[in-house]
Image (tube, rainbow, N blue to C red; front, side, top):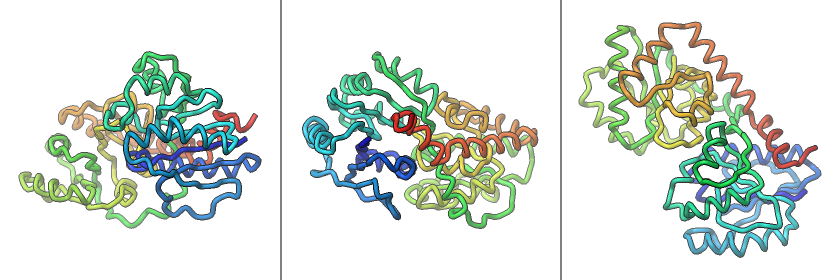
Length: 355
């Protein structure tokens, strides 16, 4: 079998979780020594390391920088590449506008934000056509599997493939964090109103519980100024701390040592932060949405984005230690089930690389 994989630059930058998807594909190539794998990319891999001999990386030329080049790539360049490589299957990490009637192709989604992003350059009609023609669309959870055909009003063959977790990186990323009891809250958005709600929820928790618990805000470097300006208006300065980071993986030590984390992202996106919170194996208070329930299952308690409800869920975790420990253990089990190797085995079966 010859599998051609397209890893677009737009996918690589919009969804940082793509790095774990690539790790799965490399692992798959190591497992399936009789098959040939070809990655078409337009940006280099970081820390790629030794590649298996049955895997080739080739560059997309010209680089897809606009809609016109995107149209040229999918409508003209890609069919020719698949014919030249004698591909028996094609996999893309984002939806695309092309007609590939002579070859089975698959779309692997971890970022549902792409489906509603008009700036991405693919109309709803073209997305519907892509999903309808694909042999299978690989989706992160049951809600996506049910909702995708309904959203695009077409018949779509879906396969469940939860986002992979690169457990092999965990020990390398952990560093010493302090021993004080605290919640963490990764600041996922430049919308400071969202952060105000989390701080108010923590304030309510402190008033009701009167514990020594503090809140550490894990803040990407480009948001530090906005966050510190916002915090200057609050009195709980001794119980609030800002931890600046450049990449979400730098926050893993704090997530790992935290009592629990408050996770309320705007987008339905399984990215590097989603993975780091799984790797930490600590309970979450998370956005009430089927997408996140599919990701964290029973490892989190869920709440609408409301300070009263978030505070209540924080109390529910804090008051029931055995329940919290059970959730921590549950997240640990999820990590094992979604490891790079386990996901590669599932992907092999979906692509029919193995009997």
